[in-house]
Length: 412
Image (cartoon, rainbow, N blue to C red; front, side):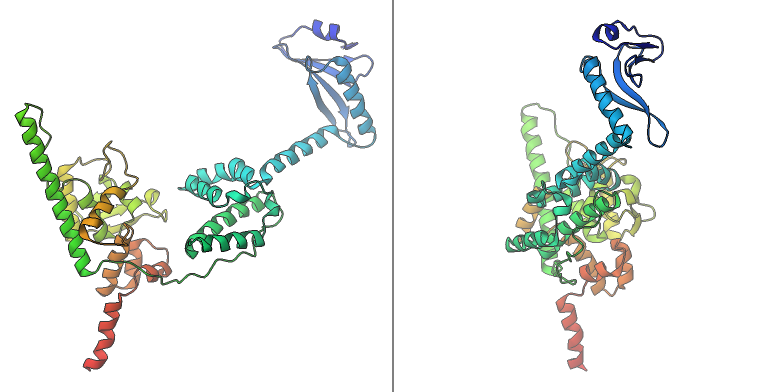
């Protein structure tokens, strides 16, 4: 069907059950397509230089007049005679525009890398947020503009601010991993930061663990804290009794979650996040075994930790105070803890212990094992390390233990 495509003739075209086309009498390749819902779109149907029939969409009727659309169609026909293919050119232009959209660091992280890492890594959202925060000055730079000099200058400033070399290394590694994906996805031809090497870090490091006196003070502070909570509950219920209020339930052996959390950590070396993820189905009281599931482990691998007598006693006692299903340690709302910072800081103050993080309970566990003569490979398995490198760092012998060893020379 051919008609002279004018405003009047196009407006008069009625929709049908299926989409149809009407060609222009003056320029037959120029036509209007009418959909069943009445949308009318100008297009150019042509053969490209390879002899393939193609359809090039020009625009909608109403946005363009037939005269404007016809003029555009004639321009494209002229390009076709010169050997060009408008549909292919448009596709390439769109691809390049999309590529440019991703080429700034911010655009790449937000629209490309962000969705991927959040879907494929357990803490992908956290990693993405860290990259954006640490490298905020470079967000509007194009990916190929990033270079070793920029990052080395950034590193120098961060170290001057007092940031640890290991922390700066982690930030740079996170950015380099992101840019590796940009290369893999053909957004850039080469990795711009291949020349950036990690800063040197003391692989042994300083591992903080509790001295015998500190551990004794920590344990006593836990006992005192539980007794204080129980005493407060008794006083509170006495006050309620006088006023004929409903009584609060009595506390058990432990005033709350903190003591069992700390004691389980000391005796298993479990990470804090793994502790927060722990469910009662992971605790086998009968076989004295604790399972750290891969879904909640830093390494992503499931491991099994035998429960010693104290850990087993603590979990049995705690189970009697709580439900036997769901999370072992629940926050006030019955959900997962994301930290225990306030209670932990108060406990350390009561025990007069300084410069000791929750994670150092894990170091304490490992150091005590090594000093007791446990072989490093067994310690590695208990900690969930993939190789001995980390075990050597976190579970090195205490100085006093080494001193006792060399003192034997004098005794002999």
